[in-house]
Image (tube, rainbow, N blue to C red; front, side, top):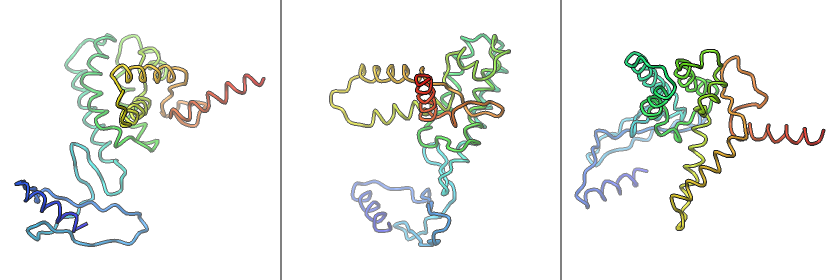
Length: 234
């Protein structure tokens, strides 16, 4: 890897560019049971590149345990501050106004680069989902509804479902297709949304009980298919 770094530094010099080596940081990813590697990597000035447990790259906190726990905690904190600001600044609680502000000023924080740090543990999923649950509970006309009911009433996906939907679209877009047009992408999204409308969206929250093991598209689609098969068999 040091040879790769040397080649990169040499390429930069040959192209009249310069890396800010003072901002270079090293993260070591390894299995907890693997041997510790203490190899020292150096800059062209022969200075040691410091080793860190966490660092921020393009606004995302990455950690050497690949958990993204710090990133999720930071996102949750920023989102709570933004929600608090909205609720203090605007008196209206009407659905149209609240959802407009939510989509414009809150979702951009919650979902920034979410295909990278997408939560995988139940605790992380619940912590993230609670943000939308809290905001929607303030909307007029939803007081007597639980969160699952509010999602249907407001025609919203859960945050878990939104992330999974976005990942599907993101992967679909990565496959090169010379004949791809905007209409093709629009058609794909419509087909995906049509399919998602056929399966329950029941995010993981305390005291909410569902038949499917989890709320992932795969789990909910499998449970729905099994239920339909059982009904057809009866």
